[in-house]
Length: 213
Image (tube, rainbow, N blue to C red; front, side, top):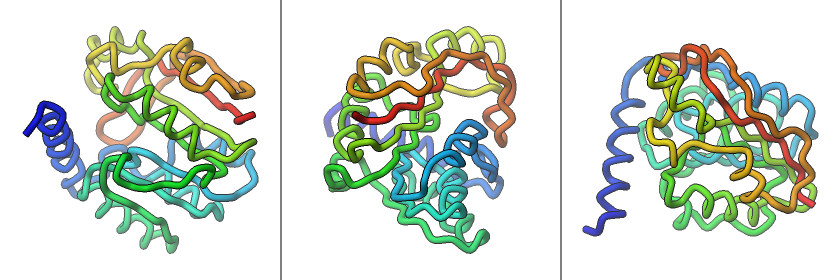
């Protein structure tokens, strides 16, 4: 087993453990920013990477979106399917690493990256792959912790988020990862999170909405 495989196993075990509990780790309600942005968009086909227990994917499905989601955690999928059933919607939820999922070029009208904190060595690569899956004039909706958040999580672990600065984001990184986009919004903001067990308190995030040219 090489180092990447070991790292993947560690990450998979970590998220399976977190999602195996009865309570939803980040709650059953959608992320506030995602909710507000999806309400502005015409429905179509949307991808949710690193979707965990499905709160955002289920919300999109309730709005009428054709929803595809993926994560490395089988436990996350199990919870997401239960949540979808509870809400009488259907989502296409895949388990596995992005390279093995065979998404098609220009398959999606929107991609929602909500706390999709991939490891530092692949996060920009993944963003560029997601760009290829998005149709022309398609939309990226992004909210994740900023590099400043390292100070917030150090002061209050309950707010959650990565504790290594390289896994966090900056405005310049988003501009570099999504260069051929009309920027509708791109800002670093301090916000208060109240999402389930693991996102509670004041944190610093990057918010981005971009339309592919």
